[in-house]
Image (cartoon, rainbow, N blue to C red):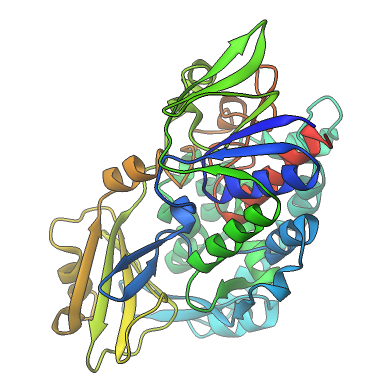
Length: 433
């Protein structure tokens, strides 16, 4: 039986640990926080709870596969629920569109409401990523990336010189459609001039598979995964910091922690490798994508009816999400902000036309620095700096023998689907005990 130490107790760490334990390895998971979950956990105060990070996921099959491969199917533990409307986008010209997911026809109808013919323009843009999706899914997402055996077609797509900004500008004359296409990357802190064009296939995935959530918040998934780790007899060490990976005779031999050295045949780094001295030299050219400003609100009273997610374009960009849990008569809301936040974010939302100030009972503010310090890295992963980013961030295998990498800072990238796939790729590389 192989001894595996997994560094990091977020989604990547828990998913990697569960898969490897099911494959027969003796797994220890080390987490610096008092509880598991990381950015997929919850924030709690005075009876309110909010998702600390994502509130929806694309590609629900990734989460379902994780549970099926590690024990009981997901449906016997928790329900993923499809959201008919993914986001409601509000533009500075006072127009708006409620963008549905999982349906090409529904998206065409919705966008035609902004202007005749815009729906077909959007559908043509999205359809343009179909071949990207099939090639990249096969060679990059569902099996470890090995350039030597990947098709020339896939390599050409992944290492394209075309960036998202150019693709979007070429595809649309209407600024609102450009904002729709760029939004996922702008929200995560990237400049679309530095994001490879093929990443636009996120719009294809949204249209084809839709967005999915969990009643009561995505933090519930962390609790269910923690139970799965217990079932698989994973040794979980919380409140334990990792100082480095110990290398002996040219390969990983242990992990140095605040609780002492943990012997290991294999180490999985499921956090920011820049914080691990042994790995830091290999990612020195990468930068983290900075999280947005976050404000969790517990509201009471006659609160305005809000959709699951509202996006207010402009500078600042403000995103409002409902969800989480609240005492009777209350509502949990989270506000995210990017850009020129020259005033309090709740007041900034008032200027966008939504006044929640009279209803605020509880407020928890979380700066980008607070989030990064608490989680030991940015949940947004590595900042896109052009196509070279793919070579500068780690893949499933690392240059250090016996060390593997999973999570937002690893190929294929940030977000629940990509992070979940990275854990599956690590399990493929390591294999059974």
